[in-house]
Length: 220
Image: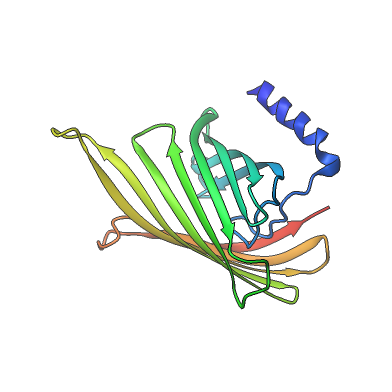
């Protein structure tokens, strides 16, 4: 693991002079952007989460390493390696993700910019996998950008049985919405909300997760 981290750091430094990374205004909401044609980008994500601020045992960390490549100026593909670490536990490999995005036009040509997003998630443990399509709708009004993500997530689980097993399908609709204002070329200030409706979808036992907070982007 130390060798991998050192290699990625060295690779990042070697490409720093000519790097043109995505400028992201939000943490959960995807915007109307894809990688440039033939461009290769390395991205690293670190997410720290604590569901109860009074209990340290609810703290967790997730790290993702992504390699992203532009097939055309409006279509890209990427692969993620995901690592997770619960409170007091060890860092472990948790999933592989494959993702592709496609923009239907150049930015600002249509009344609403539309991007199609597809992601396949295969957890390392267990017998389930996820398909997460997104419909990304975005609009720029001056220095203000609005982005909406509609997320119909599907979870497929292989269940054992006398006939060789069956595949159970769960539908978990979700969303993300963000608004940001370009206060200066370096700073974008805004907010976002996101959430999902957990299975069982048609039962009184279903639960809805809802989150909201500020979104600050700084590009030195």
